[in-house]
Image (tube, rainbow, N blue to C red; front, top):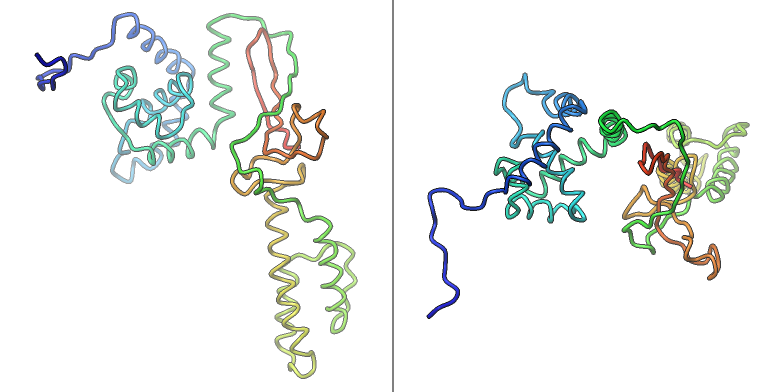
Length: 284
């Protein structure tokens, strides 16, 4: 007698939510409705609706299912896609739609990443309204969270190298022009000087100087790109996660602060009654 047999396909699926779980999900959907986040989704996902066509999936359902996924598992794109196919709760939220992990990632980048502060603010405001908690007393809490990035792929802000390069560029340019600017030269300014030199006969300026200035310009563009990614408030970033900064974590205190650098975020959180009201990445 066989114990495991294949299943016969029925007209209707026998996998249904129990009543209690359905009530929880409906209450969750009502919470999202009352928060006003639907208007933000409508403005972002359906702004080109007048041109014809429609999104390949219901953006409101995908938003709700994504939020629910983050509360149930790590929330990786592959895991979310798998949940949409095999988890009855996600089938209920998605109305049996199964967008691919690529579509899910595109949706998260276009909505969650772009408007994460506004979305969080709307959800927390609705939670405070429904629970009626008093948030007069707030506390600032900070912590460092390690990022999932290759620790050997960090890039330091090239401040010192940029200054040295600027000195070399000005020294070379002063052979042919009067460069009295005390601030760092920008790449567009150096490119203009190269154009001016190009209008002069090479036998008067020297082909070697012209080629060297071109090399300086390429290096200057590289430095400017790195400084733009770092921004004014931090001195490093990681190639695999440009939002992460190289820093020593709390666990490295006794092993030599500064000797063990990790990719991490320095998160500052405003807390009241155990609820994180808002957050920011201090970037240093």
